[in-house]
Image 1 (cartoon, rainbow, N blue to C red):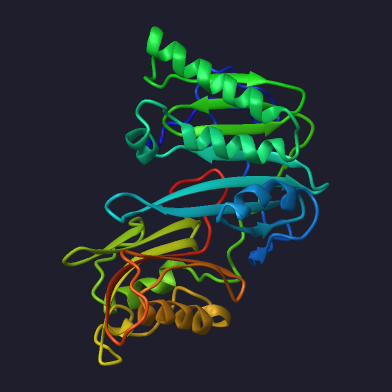
Image 2 (cartoon, rainbow, N blue to C red; image 1 turned 45 degrees about the vertical axis):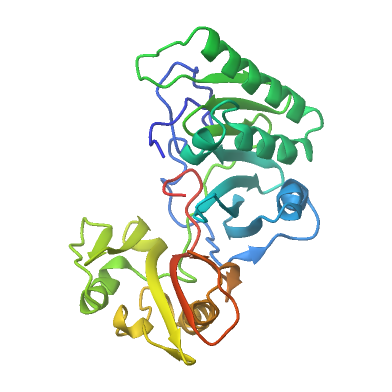
Length: 343
């Protein structure tokens, strides 16, 4: 996914579409802790969060409130689709609600796979997802959104425009929000009558510091040079990747195989993590480990909340049942900060 982002409305003003982007908005995370709460929770039954995410959850997405603070709440939604080669192709959506339960900011990222799968109808997934979600709280918004993106695509086909930064984009506004669309990265929505001054950044509930985890990663065969390296490689083709705020881990991603023969695991987790998942806090380490091992035994994926922690397990090919299992898993623990990469 390209890192260059579209121009968007900052929380304290408006960027013109041809100005350099501010992503995440300036100063969104430049603050001290503001009653940070990092225990993930299911989407509540009522209110804006429920209305926003209902179309996604009904379509099979996993959604959760992933963190909060004194000023707002962050929601994260994800679905893992499979392509013709049975590879996982995730799509995500991010939302930020203010203290009065109003949508303040949303991002519907585009994916390279969307372009490849729908070359004749680019950005279908972004438009469809955003339209269904925003219409749930702002009636009529979806029709305008689809029309704007359709017009943008038609204009590009008829007369391609090359900007100085090489990223074509468009923007519009209505009574509810400012919208900025970038064909590489998708749609960013900034509400006009709601804002969050200090964006939530907590991860203390589930994650330790990278500096405290490095030695244990090295003991498991990872080449870690931290700081500044945030991707530790493990020959021949393994990796452990983190996103950080300061030294604190926000998300951790790694891959691991599984081979069950006659009911016995032939690839123990301790081969990669001899001291266990010490990048996790003691409060969540055991239940998260058990959830990973459950997927490794069954050969199936998982997306949910375990002990207040977001856990995503993508299996390369689901193979449930039987006494023998051979599979590879891509695992993500924790949800990223809003408006940051990777997703």
